[in-house]
Length: 143
Figure 1: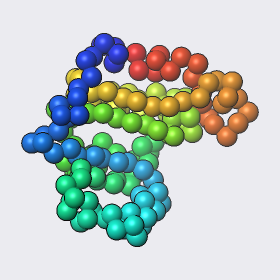
Figure 2 (figure 1 turned 135 degrees about the vertical axis):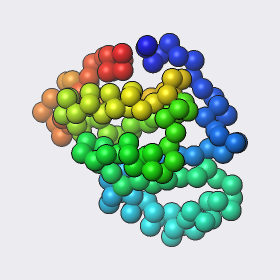
Figure 3 (figure 1 turned 90 degrees about the horizontal axis):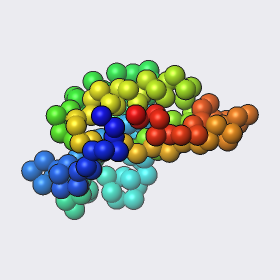
Figure 4 (figure 1 turned 90 degrees about the vertical axis):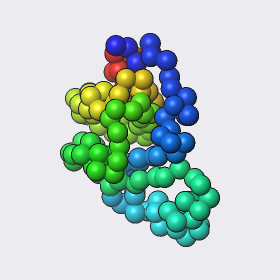
C-alpha cells in the first residue's frame, strides 16, 4: 500500500472520545529541556490539562537504539487507531540503513489510514556536511 493513496484522517478521526493525545519521542536531554521551558512558562502538564489542551506524553528515547515502540505502548499508544507521525529534524542525522529501519518500524506500528511527514535534505546537501544521509526522492523511502 502506498502512503499517498490512503485518504488522510482528519484531526477528529484521530481523536478518541474527542481527546487528542500526542506522543513526542526525543532524546532525554531534549525532553528535560522542553519540560523545563514549558514549566517555567507556566505551561506544565497540569496547566495544559486545565486549559483542555491535548495530552502530551514526552517520552525520552533514542529511536535508533531503544525499544521506543514498547515505550509508546506503555504510554497508551494504540496501534489499532490511525495516527500521524512527524519525523522533523531527524532522518538526515541517521545513516541510510538506520533511516530505512526507523521508517519500517513506523510502517509496522501505524494502523491503516495513518500518515507520516518528515523532512530530509538532498544527497548533494548531505555530501560532505554534518548530515549522514540525503535523499533526492524522499517518496521512495515510504513506498
